[in-house]
Image 1 (cartoon, rainbow, N blue to C red):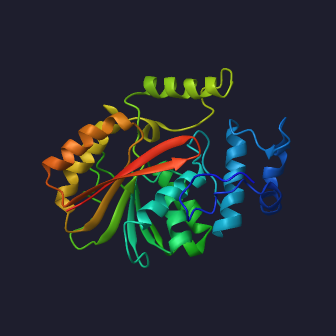
Image 2: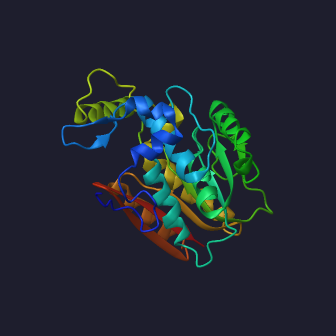
Image 3: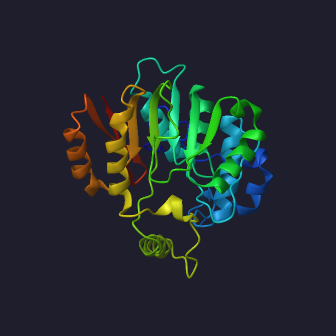
Amino acid sequence: MKTKTFHKNNIHNQDYDFELLCSNEISLSEYVFVNQYNNTTIDFSNHLALIALNKALLKTYYDVKYWDIPKNYLCPAIPGRADYIHYIADLFENKENLKGLDIGVGANCIYPILGNSIYNWKFVCSDISEESLDNVNKILNNNPNLKENITPILQTKKHEIFNNIISSNDKFDFTMCNPPFHSSQKEALKGTLRKNKNLNIKDDSSNFGGMSNELWCKNGEAAFIKKMIKQSILYKNNVKWFTTLVSKKENLKDIQKQLTKLNVKELKIVDMTQGNKQTRFVAWTF
């Protein structure tokens, strides 16, 4: 087995046990093969294979009986998503009975699912897309253990992040967010085509999926995060730690500058290594 470099508590630090996974999710079997290096694997450029893999992982390790996403929506990589959950847990001495807010939960509901399954945390999750939340509710309705701990809320004010979601009496231990990182549909398409080229995929620009609100917003990731930071000060008495993923390292300087302006009590930049991929999230508290 090849050791991976996820968080020390991440159960996905070893290669996938495809025999076990296929025994729990039969649909995965048709995508599993032995490659030229004699390794059992799947084609990670195949969107349907990734969905089947996620179903298997969620059934096998997280007691999720039903999970699916609509066509053309992002299919999250579960090991990396679990890392964000584990590193958020590191912000707290007592990791029990925490309550989180997932901003922009998407149709997959993956962070609340993992946070509840791993640590038994409670979640509120918001999104501007009714279609996304319809799918979230479908997942929850088919998993009663999740439904009682995860509450989806539609954000009807598209330029607000916390307003309309956090009420004056609400208390959250943390917020989390995987913001849209492209500034336009054109830029998002370029990014997908670049990934396709790296994976030797021809002409399938939709391979990685993703709806507009998942992939891009006006002025991109940095603008979204700076708006989040600006609005967070209004909720400093409601939330202990605000956090967000930052996909582009070059955005960190402006983000730090914005947080320094607000005189936050503490700022942390948490680096995460996931195989050959380097990513990070920013956490701040007032």
